[in-house]
Image 1: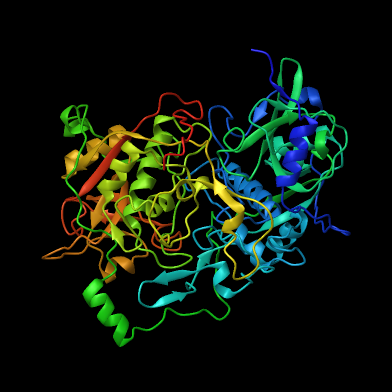
Image 2 (image 1 turned 135 degrees about the vertical axis):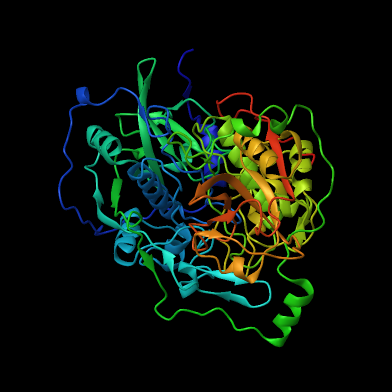
Length: 605
């Protein structure tokens, strides 16, 4: 097949320019730099002809795709390019081991000066800020598409936040932080220098004229122009050659429905659209091997209980699970029907199967405000994990949108819901990816499942403080819907093990107690005479320690809870009914190629 070259015609450029908002990249008159030692330079003949961090000897070292333009338009490409490149570099340094660490662009958009938040910035000043102050991950500080220039300034809880239904929000006592050592610019228009930096240490951020990439939908981009004005930041993640045409592999931050799973290819070696003119890098510091944590200088302690909150918890609790429906759709034999208990391994963990992590990103349902959406998180996380397993961990990693589930009332809302209804929705309608509808932890005004509540995009200018910005948003029509072919329930140790081992993580109900909320690590156990299931989470494996068998579970309360957001709990007994009410679904994945189940949205809701 011949290489597809995209030619930007004058007419489409004019239309695209009219639709584009203000630049999100701003040049710095005196860019900061902190380079300790020049990188060793290899010749072109010493580097591979094709190299892509999404597939290095079959391993994907790239983190999940993002969208800077939702829930409203924000010119934060500079923050996304910097944090995505650093997150990828951390994953590379950690050899793609669990967990993926996703740095929080919101910290930069709200706190970093002299850059202008949603009105643009520069990667080098972002790196300087991270070196000086550190940065948290997204389960501490979710992206809200607002910054210090339009209503969301820097505060203690921008770095890290937790919320409770009745007690409000506060800053956790401690959280993981990340920083950089070296950072600086790559020599301008030096193709080989870019290749060396990418190959030896990971993705780099680069400027580009975004006007010519707005309509990109595949192939190697080669616009019919030599004129450009750099106004956008992306990251180069690899390179290659197709039919004699050299190209760069590039990550964008406009959602996975754009381009090729949010990425694109562009002609290499001619500084096309400025892609080789203004590139930067940063080197992460290992703060995870010997865990480094930050704490608030004047920590906002968890609010004390009041009479109102005590009564609220007594009558309503923290329950985010409603009565689970009994509806099932079973088409094929279930794993426990063809796998005998003695055929199962003593220990098994989808976070590390022969050195590969198949688990999607860790989540936090309780920020930026409290939302009882565990029923949507436990199910969509398990379903996304199963998609990644079915795709054999191939790039791109898939993360699904619990916010779409809440918007559509697909079983409930922020006041709780039915996990089984999520799987029925995935079978009937399909679930979009997170970059279609990022998690905002609130119910829509009306749970109508309108096209814009399912998958959206925004442009124009950043909305002023106090304005929603919805007038500049519209429903995206072409996106991937991930569907389930069948779904059902499972309970009992051997049946649960077989289901997890054969097809992937399962959602499970649990009777959460104050003790479980306070869990910080180890194998948890608690006896309860009458356990009442009030929370949904997921089980990803099991193990045994000192003769005690345990389940390995993922929660949706952030990485500062438990063991990086996960937990271990005793198997067979004293485990808050975690073995009595579990659920699963089987995703439709026809191939490892992305999108494996692409279905253009037809606008029917």
